[in-house]
Length: 422
Ligand SMILES: [Zn+2]
Image 1 (cartoon, protein in one colour):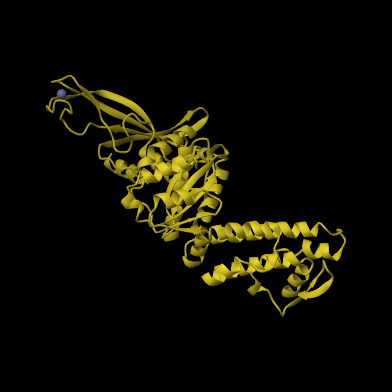
Image 2 (image 1 turned 60 degrees about the horizontal axis):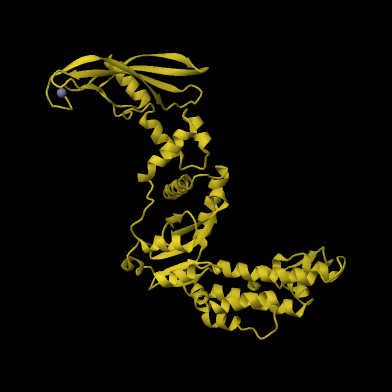
């Protein structure tokens, strides 16, 4: 008997000296072939938990079926445990033996729960995890809810350097997200919406002393986060994200380029010059070649990438001016040249209306744009996290429950960190 018990302990990976192995068999339940291991669980001592008298007597057994983990989902495993019942002669209290492998009143072994919680870190659907463990999707969701304690959702501290952004989630709503812009870019908070009051209330839950520790806050330009940041974080420098500035410039440039292009016949050379190879305009000027010639089939001639850009820009004066402004801002940003950047924001040539608006916005936020060239922080890490969140939502076919989405995001981030360390 003992050697059998030892062997079963080894095979199933369970350890409980009160659990005595009795036998095994197959059983069909709703057309599924289950492997059943049968045990007796004896009551370990003789002390009544109610009155602490040593007057317990045996009082029969209760049969409990517990779902267990299986290496193969087509042959799920059940532990049929005969739990010994005892009765106190002193106070008449009856008590059922319990085992650490399964929680009281629960029909699913702790091992299954742990496995499910581990699976929640992966990029998998709820149904897939449920099927794999022979439990229902709602049980998986319940574990997700119960695992609050594991995911460090509520933080007592604010990061020294943070980044703010938003993303689309439950019901296509926008959620506010804040991350630590240092180290492993831990998510600080995800809020159910991005209303001013919600964000304020969140940050105001930290004392001023804590908020005063924040040194930089990265964000994108077209948001009202600036005002909140200025008011609530006395010592923080606001950083307008570099990539965001570049994106605004290239969008304006492309808009005007398309506008010029449409002035010409579709068969004309000018149309073709502007229509094709448009990516070259957005490449940093320093990366264009003066030497390497290639055959451009759209304009039917051999050019270097530098010549190709020039040919296109010569079509329209303002397009040329736009290009120069865009390039000079991009170069100065990447070289962290503050004086150069200030100069670039006051162009002498006439630029397109689209570019004028962008430049004006940048000038209004000059201080923060200059910060972008001064600090190493940007929203780069945030972009990565937003990509991860998108992927989780795609796998889950969207979320209906905000909490579930947030837990999955936290778990996924935890898993990714672990993989990076390993
Ligand atoms: Zn008792």
